[in-house]
Length: 252
View 1 (cartoon, rainbow, N blue to C red):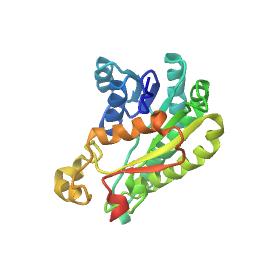
View 2: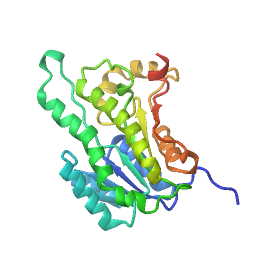
View 3: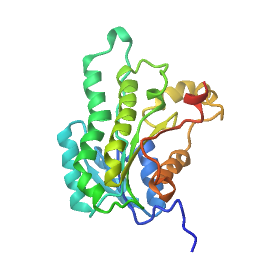
């Protein structure tokens, strides 16, 4: 029998921020490929829709480390172990330099950087439980090309947080490799999401033209990257930040 390098069936995945945007794309993409998918989100109606689609949906507020640890406890009560952790939940904030508020730093960095660290930390027993050298567990952090290049928007705390999550990815990769856990990041470019909606509504053609491929991202683009990192195909990769952006960050 030929080994399917991209098989994720039978794995258990937790996707934070899994009710909309890129998180929902990833969650439903893994579920369609045979993984058991647990998502975390805040809105009850969106969580109910996810349950109707076959996902396990947990209500959680990751804006504090305590919230991350509470989610880890909920997950431990639902599943025996976690093979794939996708730290996707995040926030942004935009304001002119002269008006950029202190609150924008506290809120964005807590959710975009501290929460992924706290949740990874709290889930270590679940991640390590079934991990082996041949089939390590995977942590996938969702960064952004705005953490690689300087964005046009005045999103100072967001771009800083994404640069930070890229560095945190490398740091965790070094320390968790010996425990059979890989840690990588995906840095998406423009995709259909609530966060991107205002920009795409006004500048869709311009945003698409910024890519050598002339388009914005499709769900399969980010699903494919996550499946690669989660499967046998990606088991020897750790500490990497992969731009999934049609070349915007790497060719301009």
